[in-house]
Amino acid sequence: MTNDIIELRLLAKCFSMNMYKLCDSQIYALAEKTGFQNLSQIKEIVLSLKTHSFNLIKLKNNFILILKFTKSEALILCPSFDSLNMYLRHFEWLKVVSQSENICKLAYKLYTNKETPSWPLVFNQYAGVKDKIEKSINISSKEMFINEEEVINDLKDINEIALEKALGKITHTSYIGSFFEKNNFIRGEKDVLIGYVSRLNQAAIQTGMPIKEAFIIQDKLMEKIELEARINTLPAWLNELTWIYFCRLKLLRKELTIPIEWI
Image (cartoon, rainbow, N blue to C red; front, side, top):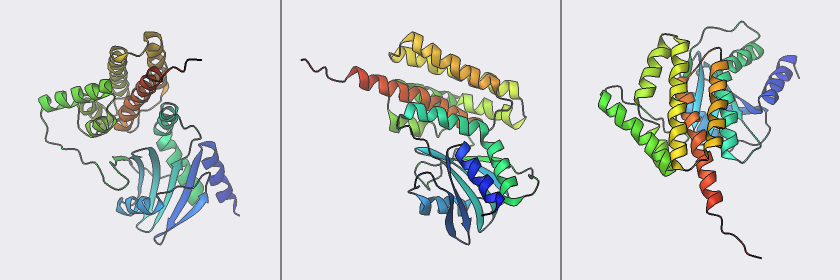
């Protein structure tokens, strides 16, 4: 075993990830904490990506990072967290989102033993494993406002299917955020995310989340945003911030509806 492979495995262990290599249309495990069940479908995604790129892919219940070197060679990193609590797992995935570019760059250097190139970090969202969500570019301000209201209402209704669909649309927040992101206005990106967290927090309280708990979550998320040196893939941040509140509200509703067993 080469030192490079050992170091790659250490990287995978540090970030609690499975790691695979695509070579000549075959996928090989380099570091596997738990078996990943969708490797054949993941391969289809990998083959569809542009070469010379770092990719953050949002699946229904996970993220994956893909370093695409050539048409037939890629490195795939799949987070594998032990917690079955989706509320806690979304906090873990937010860490992956915030560190995605650094993880890709470090993995590239360990894998190739070369200096990291200035490849773009591309974010794509998939409804299933291979069905890419395409966002319409031609959209009016009114439609963006309606889309954002739809996200908030689906959050309040704790409607998972509708919320997932709504998050695939362009909202006023995501549109403004993309402007700041393209121009590398980091302060603007942070302000957009903080404003969005405030709105999610208000919606959560209106839905029944205890006020004290809601503000603990809000403070934790705002601190996380402020401490970031850079905000990469802002759409992924918006997704995860929404799901953190959604999963906690869903858990609270379940706890409140558990029947009491009288002794």
